[in-house]
Amino acid sequence: MVALAPEVILANGTSVVAPLLQATRTLPVVFGTVVDPVGAGFVASLARPGGNATGFTAFEYGMSGKWPELLRQIAPHTTRAAVLRGRSVASGSAQFGAISVYPYVHFVTGGGLVSYGPDYVDQFRRATSYVDRILKGEKPADLPVQAPTKYELVINLNTAKALGLDVPPTLLARADEVIE
Image 1 (cartoon, rainbow, N blue to C red):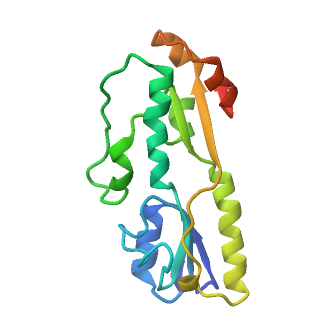
Image 2 (image 1 turned 180 degrees about the vertical axis):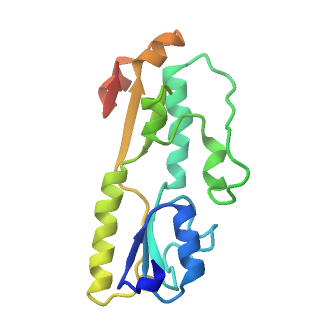
């Protein structure tokens, strides 16, 4: 990709962005979703990225507190929860102090109970605006890394039933998608 010398590269995810930034520190790179761009070393800070990369984080870490709140609503008798995470992924640890609900919809469509996370289609719509701005002359270093602004709540009623859980009607009403 770098050898083609495009005017800008739109990339997704830490595993794609990391090799790109190792290959070039001059071509502009806009990432659509990266868990922790500062922790991964892609940008100096969210407000002032510096360098040739900018884009959008996969999460705003404060929203991680929403996950245990959802769990308490769906399973009010739960007193302990565990978080499983790959130790090989150094970035993103800041958000894991407060979770137990899935951050991605595909976990719930695959049988998980509930997810609350960013609308990734919206993330990439917003990322294309950064590509446009860079093509018009702005520098990635001057475009702050942004957090998601639109989130989706998805509930799997089949899983809730299998677990013997009654999902409160108020939570069902707030859901963007209910799998039955």
